Length: 176
Image (cartoon, rainbow, N blue to C red; front, side, top):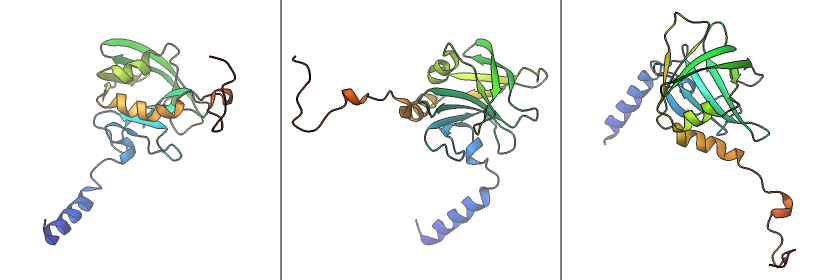
């Protein structure tokens, strides 16, 4: 590629940048770009998401190594409350409470239905229960398994100090 073509491509990319959604609310699954999150959270945003109009689900490795599920949206009334979801044709309502983290609200998923569905499912339709007249947002789960697995690798159980490999030449404490 000649230098003129490369320069034209760069100019075109910068001209197109304001039209594209911000990275954080881009449709699909990716690392969460929220401050301080790094690669410990995966963010999946619905089709048609823009930087001003978005609905996303986040799967995060918490500080205590547990898994947290969050809803993050531009909804004017906030994200707390009940959310209606249809995950691979199975419909449920889930409660979401305000959380001090960077996301809108934390979802209650005691049975693991949502986390399992996000990893292994095909699609999710979701909307806040108070928005009965509003349309459901569509979230494609393509790529969710890998994205969630990479984020949750930081939640792997830690090996207790007594099970760690000791100094070179250390003998086993039990006779096998």
